[in-house]
Image (cartoon, rainbow, N blue to C red; front, top):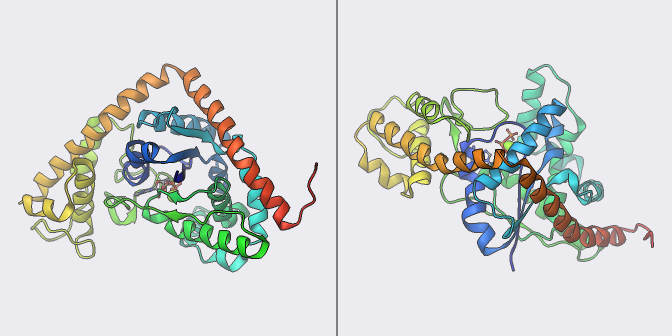
Length: 332
Ligand code: ATP
Ligand code: MG
């Protein structure tokens, strides 16, 4: 059976981008068709300036929202990265396979490093090595497919390269994974700045729709989205990025496709109104289930405990095999 692994960082409140680009498919498709693991990758949240209490709170919230979005612990394994030591163990071995040059070429490193510097902070070494830990997350489970948004494909490429290199040098140990971005909404853009991605760790802005935004907040944000100077509704990511973003969000939420939807609308106002309602409807059941789950924190903890137990069981033999292959003396 196909093994699927994917994760989400507790670096901020989850966004519509996270949902349409990743989480929704995990719940609606992946957990049914594959042997799937989903992870709150909390170690990754420590790569930038962080508040310990906030990371803890956001980790619990991310796990709760993943369940609210439809992950079923009977059908998939949901766990927290730091509960499974194998990720950090394997990451070190992969640091011995990756190169400094490879890390510095990562687009996300360049972007996040520039942002940290603008904020006046110093750069954590872990921000540079983060893609290696992500490769460990993936390779520890002999993952075949990694359902992620567009922004993560370069990191999955690195995981592939490291798997191939390790296997070549030290003997076949890892499955070579591949990224599987969604057909629409692979990169939801910021409503106020359609040139940049809607990201949860961006400074709180009116251009980001959060999964827990009240319906009226969603409507206001969508109605105020920046559109382009033309008047006609056309789907063109290059010259009309604001309108293209709305069409993609609408398509992802209502099941249509962006080109066809462009032909249906005569004004930006009507497009925004329908997009806002479509988003509100997609979020409604997630928010409802989230409220129910918040009333039962013991349930969420139990799911994470059992998820970590299962994940450990899967990862340990793989990471032990990597330890032996690379030349470390077995402890028993
Ligand atoms: P951060 O700003 O901390 O990097 P993020 O919003 O990018 O946060 P991640 O935890 O890095 O979220 O990514 C979780 C998943 O959501 C990944 O699969 C990623 O590709 C996807 N994703 C994130 N942002 C978007 C977006 N704007 N559109 C589509 N998918 C997205
Ligand atoms: Mg990200």
